[in-house]
Image (cartoon, rainbow, N blue to C red):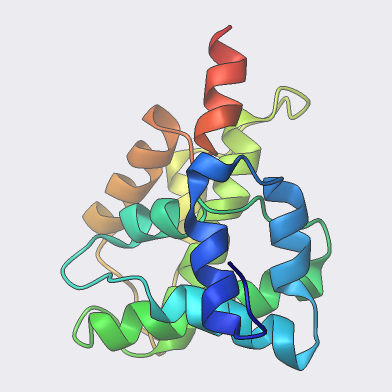
Length: 168
């Protein structure tokens, strides 16, 4: 049962067997209200990204909800994700800003590569170029960025139920 504790709500949102509306969860977690933010923080805080790849961690994070359409909500959510990812992997990037920008870039790449309405798909070179200097004004290794591109290209970042619907 639910009480008025943000951690309880975060636990509820993580229970995929309940069939909760993932769009509604995303909208709720993205709201700029103290309780909603605390629920987001509790959800993110309960995840363990230690030793995990950025794209794998992002996939896990996004498995509990659908990103809202409003940029400010996405921004809040991705900022908290990046902060937690960097706390769990302190030597991966120069700072959380890099993880934030790269995570956002992966979401944009996901949309670009897998939205049938987009005709001119982003190339690997464009993805690498778009992410120059994001690691405290330093470039991330090209091979690393290319592997992220390949991962999103071959394995879309999407909710399990969205993938199942596409496969039907």
